[in-house]
Image (cartoon, rainbow, N blue to C red):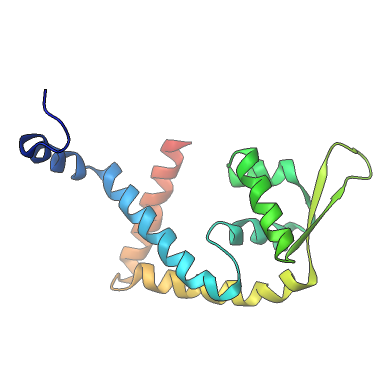
Length: 152
């Protein structure tokens, strides 16, 4: 049996890398790294801006709604909210109607970030789509939407 360190084994692995799924994984990792680099100047980490966008668009939300909208597990969102609270970007409180529910609300400091995050996302979009024509950008968006639909 061949092992991953074996030359013959490694000669077969590149075929796996030539798949669409592998390309999506590589692009996803690189896109997140670029987002992380750009967001660093705002005090946010990649992924946190998505939670903040939900709060900016909808106002205070139950943490369960954030979990559902982000499609992440509860522990990940809980840690994210805790870090954002420690950074002064959100505050948590108990729901007045359901004491079990935690409401997450953006702070004034978070509201001040909204424009900066929008600019960062515009910059990320520019870096991501550099060299693509408007038609190619539209086609990429259409194809990614189909892939997203297939995976949901």
